[in-house]
Image (cartoon, one colour):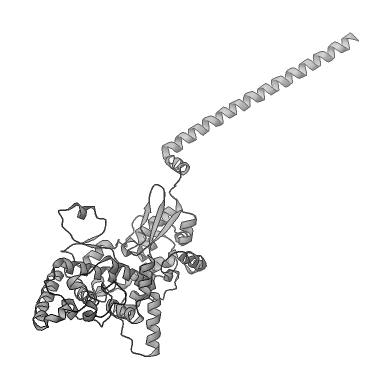
Length: 445
């Protein structure tokens, strides 16, 4: 995180941050009473790291022409939330048609001189110098009416610009890494490791493909689990894992084992998860993904499950260690907790004891947690001596090692027996010579 971006984030006003919460999660506007103001302040504190992410994502896009405005992003967020199950191509076509139609009407009605005024005079001065890239500063925008400042320049809005804006809205709303679908004839599309939001996919389908989902029927039998071995402190100190804090939700709990290092990716925007979960407090925990996306959030069960994985990695018993580690890094301090998870009668809150419970309680993250636990139980060696020993763990190596050990034992046994016999023979000879000498001496006298 650059110093410039951090400084820019701090310059976003509290009112702007409140507007972001209104647009993304549907929180009510501040009514002026003290309790609401305190609630807004608490939410802004939780979202400190998210606003860094927010500005970073805006900085990746250099908006020009028709889409270079401060409030247009809110329009695309609202449109995306209205129809999360609709394929992206249909969204683009509808948006292009609507924007270009209203642009034509606005251009015919507005004086020609208005287009020659500076951007700040038409859209308002950005709070972030040089970043007129989508900071939300106005009230929620209904997709049924395109905001006038989206129509500020003459010309036709292209599907590419609309596509970019939709992808940005999805990234900000869900903290998910994705790219728009580009020319499939180029190698760049094939070589990209970033998930592609294809035109025939809805945002619901994209999220379902990127977030792991496994069957809760664990049929491989079950083995005991000690949750203390899943703590970040234990994983770093005993399993040799380096924790990488990521802002890509789909990379949460991803374990990467290379030749020289092992890394565990942990989604760091815990405040984002907390605020999203609170925004759905009036919905049942089993609300599906599509209905939840209409509120701008992942479904409550997934959010709860993800927060609980963070609680396992960073338990309150390690709070002092966690805070010390987080202070050294520019990551979300909300990882240290605590979290206010509402009561769910269908969820077992007892500590995990075996793998069957793991798969029942964590249908999305169970496999990744299981892989992490296996690594904690039997760490992959990173030095040459450890690799040499690891290669000789196979059953055939065990057999030959046992055979060699048996031969060595027999050799030492035979050698010890021979040496014992030799010692007895030498002692007998010595005793015999001593007796003979004594006899000769007595006969001579």
